[in-house]
Image (cartoon, rainbow, N blue to C red; front, side, top):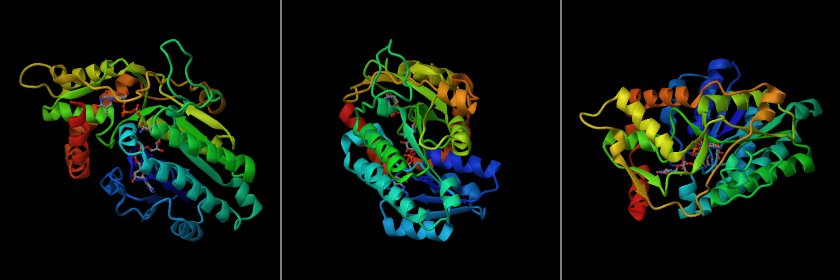
Length: 353
Ligand code: NAD
Ligand code: TYD
């Protein structure tokens, strides 16, 4: 069995769905179910005995000890995190708690669990830590892309807490010999993403006839990776990655935010035309994010050179699949766009107006 933390979130859920399609190994899914955790996403697995769900906070050491003892996983894949930069600006406390204290608690639980294993099982065990390119800070238009050897320079509370968690994972490898693997990935997009992030937010607002709020001048650059490609990279790193190493994962798709929004509007104009005019007419410029990083770009050549991984989707194919998915699954989006999420959107964008 493998243990996945944060498996009810966007990437974790995509990973579990893909994993159970391609492997016969069961998954223990450990998730606190914060506003970002959604079991609806995993409803196709309701009767699947190979998916075991446990609603547990990764800061709860006693619960983690019990789960590790009971299920004896061969690997831990750590996705759970507070993951949204804007929320980290409004309230960094939860980010420190889950991303730092939670990762530390999980590492300690795993360290103690490993004492119960044979030397051979200990050597085979893997702790795969899912992190972000945001730990490297911001690039200018002409800087080279982020490589694995670049110094860390996190700028938001989110990035700082992810950077701290990366350092803890690194220290547990060097100090205690834990067989760790770290992946630093660029912006993901695809099915089941919570509509607080750029791409699902723009699709949801466009379809609802609401403004499409672009921060600042819209010229900030992100590298975009289709979530299915991220999941295949993680499987590759888990199977063939070298313990103690970090791997950057990217889509080779650097795009300016405004260009992304234009492309989304053009796709919607084609797939679900409005009665009159283009979705582009809904785009508005709003107050910029404080400390907004200008450019992220990933050099993913190490992963290709050492493990032979490359993304399968281009930005065009991945985005077309994504828009079609949201059009076909509006019930999922409608359910998510209630409760806590609605409150967040109302207060966040009221302040920017
Ligand atoms: P998400 O916010 O969609 O999901 C996070 C999940 O973690 C949720 O299911 C939530 O309930 C759970 N969780 C939060 N706090 C928890 C706690 N204390 N204990 C247990 N579970 C808890 O996030 P995501 O977009 O799926 O990101 C997954 C991982 O990938 C994160 O570590 C994130 O930093 C990293 N990452 C994300 C992106 C991206 O573009 N989304 C890019 C690079 C790296
Ligand atoms: P986001 O999806 O929040 O990811 P991250 O901040 O982790 O890169 O944002 C992606 C980019 O889109 C980022 O430069 C901020 C910008 N953005 C907007 O312009 N408008 C929005 O409503 C949102 C949510 C993001």
